[in-house]
Image 1: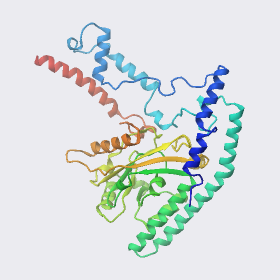
Image 2 (image 1 turned 90 degrees about the vertical axis):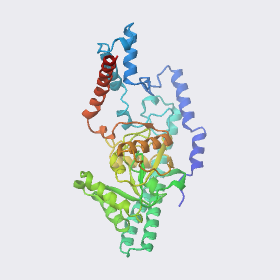
Image 3 (image 1 turned 180 degrees about the horizontal axis):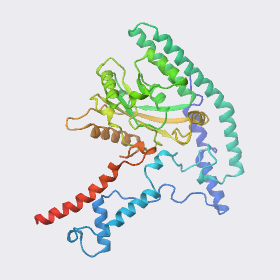
Image 4 (image 1 turned 135 degrees about the vertical axis):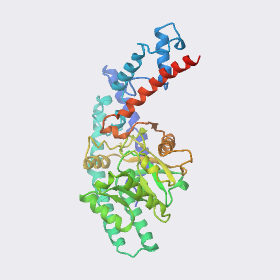
Amino acid sequence: MQPLLTACEVQGAWSDSAGPQWATLRMERGAKEKNHQLYKPYTNGIIAKDPTSLEEEIKEIRRSGSSKALDNTLEFELSDIFYFCRKGVETIMDDEVTKRFSAEELESWNLLSRTNYNFQYISLRLTVLWGLGVLIRYCFLLPLRIALAFTGISLLVVGTTVVGYLPNGRFKEFLSKHVHLMCYRICVRALTAIITYHDRKNRPRNGGICVANHTSPIDVIILASDGYYAMVGQVHGGLMGVIQRAMVKACPHVWFERSEVKDRHLVAKRLTEHVQDKSKLPILIFPEGTCINNTSVMMFKKGSFEIGATVYPVAIKYDPQFGDAFWNSSKYGMVTYLLRMMTSWAIVCSVWYLPPMTREAEEDAVQFANRVKSAIARQGGLVDLLWDGGLKREKVKDTFKEEQQKLYSKMIVGNHEDRSRS
């Protein structure tokens, strides 16, 4: 089964007069002629931040406010307060965490939205073009995609249920693998997903853990349409529950009850038992625990890195020019999100399989998780952040505040100790 639109057709459509660059240039010219503001000031960042340490910045503040060098003023100075005040104002104005949970801002209009702040002015020609796009996406592509999605999900439920009744053995594993791959690939076609897989020689193997950055629920079918994985997740009700119960009959997926998910030791035990059996499928995990807007990678939860299994990192990067895959769960429900996906022109992404990584002798789980995260961010061209994605719904933990206090205290106390020795 072929995609509804091939990669060449999609790229060709965007390279002609209906492309986003042409549309953007046309709107820029029209806005300039009518003296309208097209771009929001500071779209790509309000504040320019240099990667300097706390000590270096405070030293600079002291030098700018006094002729004395830092070495001669080792005690607390009132000017130090300005560093923390400035950092607080910067965080309020340009919070590098909160903006990771809203859709990525584009430099060009992708013919999908007319409500973007930067592109409020639209000419008659572009309005007509946008209207034709709506008719094509909603009246032609959407029905076909819904039909494909219904076919894929139905086949997955029926196929895994039938395979589940077969006796355990190689034949059952063979059928289960191909049923899963077939159904996931149909679902990928339902999104007109155009995926480029790199370095397939590094694909996850049995007895390992596949970890990837998380942008969308469709990350699962993006990866599962190219490989055979055991899923890990919480038991759901409704349609999702029906699918989970059917899938687990044919494949050793790891589903947890709601009460079990909170028990970190039980989860680790179940995962350890799974990966110790080298005949079992690799486990697919998204350690961030929430969806990030395809611009960065946030803190990986350490649980997946404590069990001593080989980790297979995967970097996923979507091209928002054809459709935004990011799921803002606080703004859109699952049905609304899927509707937005199925009414996009296409979902275009690249997947990189990185070489397997193992925990080194001197590393703890957190250091190992950070090393894997950095490799994924570097390969996918994403920003590597230390912040916990849980801040999407929770307040900043006191430990983060205490860390800054300790850094400042260490600088002051350390200077006092140096002076006493001299």
